[in-house]
Length: 167
Image (cartoon, rainbow, N blue to C red; front, side, top):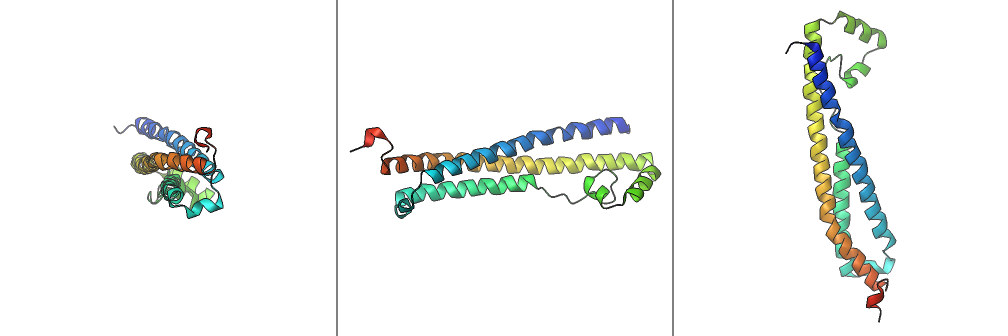
């Protein structure tokens, strides 16, 4: 397993998972925003005095804020680590162009192989954090669906938007 090509393919394979988790982040952000907008459009100022509107609305808001928090954390994971790496993007940008080129060309094959393996490990850690945060955001959004439906039903009833319930 000392072949640099094998290690590079492993890193490349791992990096293909990042767009998948990013798509979930963007999709869930859109869903959360849509839920929030629909709830806000259905709310009138006077509704806030009614506990049966405020309670599901507050639970909904807490769920969405929790989801947004996890989506934010998934979007900006910890990028520490990879000290002196010639592969890790954060460490590359800390060097000048000339120094980076010189250090890269002076690097031994064994050191570069170790650096690539370090990147496989570090990116796997970042990816795990992202997936965990997205999972937590999905759960928070899912738990917000029932309060959202109750909120919509109550506000629709109050504002007589449900024809069957008109008196």
